[in-house]
Length: 145
Image 1 (cartoon, one colour):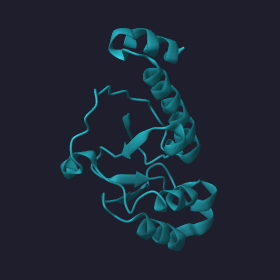
Image 2 (spheres, helix red, strand yellow; image 1 turned 90 degrees about the vertical axis):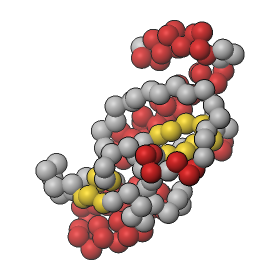
Image 3 (cartoon, helix red, strand yellow; image 1 turned 90 degrees about the horizontal axis):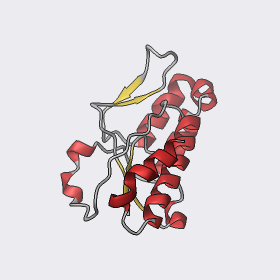
Image 4 (cartoon, one colour; image 1 turned 180 degrees about the horizontal axis):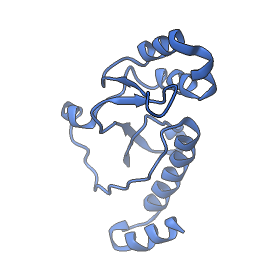
């Protein structure tokens, strides 16, 4: 099963038996800044290492404390740079039935980790169902509870 997750959050998907591709969908990558009105904005394709180095130069203590630097460091081990869904048609088709589910996530490390775990639980429930198309309403209702 392929899962599209935003925010670059990665679980140990190999252990979970899932094949994950992660994309953003906005115009830019926005990371928490010194205030809500001052995000750090990068173009998709900007290497995580470049973002990491840039934020270290700005305020290493702030970005370590708010979890941005640890998140970028983790992302460095996953892929070179954040990718935008709309720009990656060359990745090829995903030959699976598609269920698009939106989990609202505050753009911070802690919230993303929690929601990623919840997304994994939902995927495992769907994977365990022989014909999820027939039971999707029940699965989603139970998941929301």
